[in-house]
Image (cartoon, rainbow, N blue to C red; front, side, top):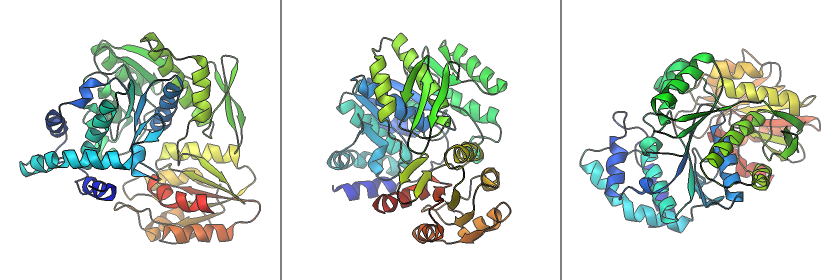
Length: 424
């Protein structure tokens, strides 16, 4: 099977199953000899920052010379970003081989009335690849929620991580942070080490109670002893216990994520992992996480950020104040219709000189015209340009030497435009 045909086969599967639960992926993995049971894991759930925490943690472990698998979603440019080992994406030929070998199993299950979703199948492929390649450890990011997320099929993990929780995917996970927390805390396994960032008391108590139920040790992450050092479009650094660390991800919010990562590293060391301080510094300095406050210093700065919910937009707003002070900001905005659009864009009020509303390449996209009707309530200069590439051209045409272009609202939009921006 050719690579393109393999991806086509994967994407032909349904996005959602007929009912929540892990029965389908359990049946699939049983027929694939349960590769997930032969690996060690750091399992990461949460609403905000989980992707950055995964990227930092995986890079540090790689720098400590562990063969480290990384499973993330969604991808930004290349489908294979979802399955990596030591910063290398799964080769196209290997992904095609795995699909060629396993897709008949998926088809047989579907014919028997067992729905295998796209995400379940990709997760199974990742387990197969990581097991084949004998990874020492896998950093495993949940897709949606936790309790019934396909990644939660694993029976045990070394560290379970819950990053800050806020309202997102409320139609699936619930309409309060407590309901969402109840889904995400179910990634906690028996006798694991649990890392979470202290937030509202009700959420803290729920996570602690579930950790106690599972007889798991809790490690609290907070910003004690860590502080921003230098913040600019070209440099991000922080101080931790008197040492300066360079971080190859922009934004003061990444300092909070770094605090979580330090706590994860501490928990891993308590579990026997040898992670030198040199590897930690190198990992922070070399980590790459496309589409998350990613700056391309072209003739004018172009910033890509996948912020798509109110808490993410709050972080983006703070970054604008810190990194783009005094700049005329022209924003290309595209969002999905099932997001809290009004609650999200309100956080950017007063910061954007022009807004070009467009449409991400996704079936759940909000129309440019509808998005404009919402954005008109918060910004003075708003136009609708449905094609993202035309929207980017329009933004660049409005820019001058004191401008910056911001692309935000959806990782699908960032994915659509990133390659073009690199080539500018």
